[in-house]
Amino acid sequence: MNKQLDEQLHSFTEYLQIEKHYSVHTFEQYRHDIEEFYVFMKEQGLRSLKDVEYSDARLFLTKLHDHGLKRSSVSRKVSSIRSFYRYLNREKQLLDNPFSFVNLPKKEQRLPAFFYEEEIQALLDACNGDTPLELRNLAIFELLYATGIRVSECTNIQLGDVDLGMSTLLVKGKGKKERYVPFGSFANDALEQYILHSRPKLAKDGSHTQLLLNHRGGALTQRGIRLILNKIIEKASLTGKIHPHMLRHTFATHLLNNGADLRTVQELLGHAQLSSTQLYTHVSKDQLRKTYLAHHPRA
Image (cartoon, rainbow, N blue to C red; front, side, top):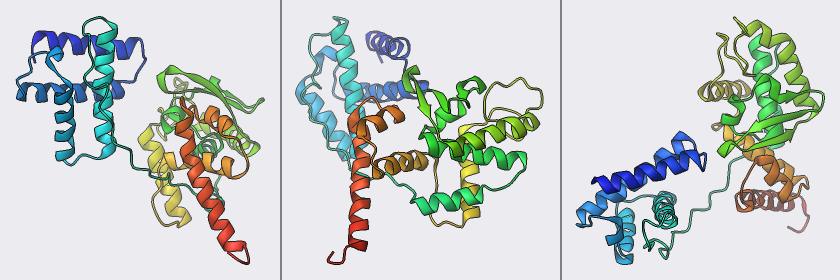
């Protein structure tokens, strides 16, 4: 990589960190995509970004397809490079953006997996118990299902973020955006039992301010939550796999199935774009269709 390309990439990643507040994982992904494009430029004898033309952008897209990448991966890489050029245009370092008119491949429409209400009840039954860890596990499950928060948001919750009196949770989401999410009486009871009777026994030295603690008294990690949920589904004897995001999918699907409007669900999930939330309407319609076929006498 020559000095100019290196400086341009460094400037862009600083912009993603400082101005856009992107996570380390996100801007590293941008960096990787752009460095991959730099390798392509070297193969094509292109020494600077201003030498890249629309035909080169199309050739790069073709090469990505030839490598057998998924459409979602191709779209992400092209979006990364397009954003990079857009930033350099804004900074007056480049005049053109050869990726402006490159059509992104349509993403595969995968419907998010979710649990039916009877499955949720079976999982809740599997959480029963009165040991400190069992009370904690029930609080985790109730909280994820009641709020639809991401597992990363769950592990970042501080004790002061929980308001049991108002049954609300302060959630720090992507891009350092904050939102308040309500939760119901079942989650409130589970959290109260955990905070009053379980957490003090898990907290060894009392130095951690995180809400959720592991068996050693340290902050619970995302991997820890995944292990807990896997144990719950094994105990419930349900077939298939569970991952934390399934409870987020279930939260959204159940709200929509029971009449919640799309904008409200968008706010609760912390989605920046309504299109991200609209994916769940397909799940809801599918569920409505199954119910119709199962119960209508002339279906």
